[in-house]
Image (cartoon, rainbow over all chains, first blue to last red; front, side, top):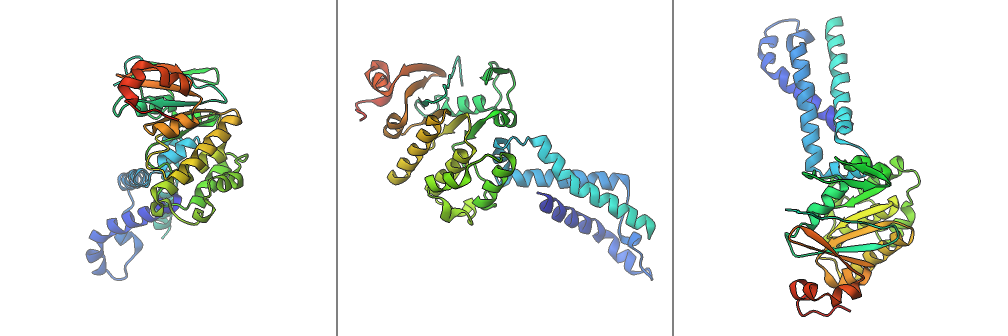
Length: 99
Length: 217
């Protein structure tokens, strides 16, 4: 689940960069902040979408019932799914700010 | 769908929940397992009453719910499932369960590649390894081959002999009558306790409305 959340987060972040790439290519030298948008709104949106997609994917794979039989509730699964995108968003924000 | 249904699972016994399609067997099991919410009613498990039971809470206490559809994650190997079970419940007896249900050769495969019988055996192997205090199994004999039915029945008996309260819902009259200690008949959203399988076969209404002319041995 953590690996899946990480992959989905990377995919969403790449997707969010796509609209900025043409404009960024016209700037030389290009900095990460030219393509990586860091804002509270986008961060929350990406975390929420990642969690939603991981949760839906877990349901598609029929994992929730098995996990429930192990005593793991849906809120716990959602919390676990939220950890990778949250950590990665924080790391990305710090990285872009420090650049 | 359910009117005034009740289910009382006793440790060490196997109860067969029988009834025509749509009579509410699956709904009752899901409610009892905390996988579906009822409008009214209480689930009492290990002297604790739950007005709004949740499967994860009941599972922590020792309940296991085997659904009619696949229990296992389709894209993780069976070995992963046993590892997850062992991590959560270190006392789980995986080797004995895989041996009892003959699923050793399935450990490296993913359930999406299993046949229907293999899925049922694998799911019950996980339940057997868990050694729950109460097992609610929905349609475990559905489409099972004769050889699988024997292994499934033996696993249910093993669990009951260890003190587990087993409830099995289904339509496979011969399999259920053979393995059950008690029969509960579900009709029109209510439950009726019929006693032993022999008693159930003497019940005129049960014979006329459900068994038809069948004699179950």
